[in-house]
Amino acid sequence: MNRARITILGVSVVMGALLGSATAHAQHRMPGTPSAAAPAPAQPATSTPAAAPEQAVVLVAMTGDASVDPHLRSTADAIKRRVHERGYRDVESARLGAALAPPNDISTLRSRLNAGCLVRVDVQAHDLSGVSLRLVVETSGGAQTASVQASLGEISSKVLAAVDPLIPVARSVQPTPAPAPVPPPGPAAYD
Figure (cartoon, rainbow, N blue to C red):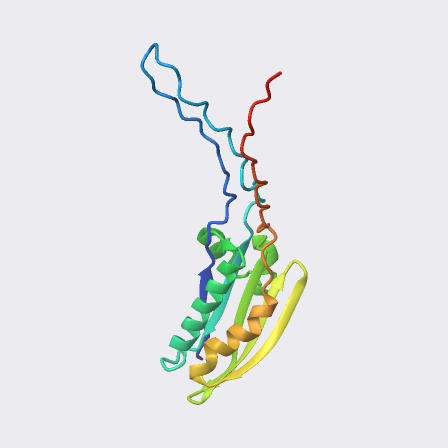
């Protein structure tokens, strides 16, 4: 019996908040000389701290067929890049390995890992002319599925086109407001 292998790709992207900081530079002058100008006022931070990045998992079934599996691996890489773009990061490999260990059921994997998104590509059938795939994207909002029929050369593009609208942007990715412009100092008023 030929068992399907699953390629597991953790998704990693560093999506921490970029904290702006204002630093004051010390003025160096000789004793007894007047100071040149007062340092510029500190600028406000350009972004606010975001929530911890959500995690995601990409699972792609392999067939064991050397003519099909390279196309499935490149498809897995394309999905991984797309999930990165949406703001997800890796589930730690130790946690993922433990969650996949028997007798665990793959249908509860996303909730057991507390992952924001799980993308699964299951091979329904394959031959030298192409593959039949079932795609599942699970989020806290539920599971969405799609089916793809593709020749070997079309696998990546067709799977990515089908899965792209199903992958939401991570909740931890928040747009940062642009800083308010600071007006230049005006002339001093004299009485």
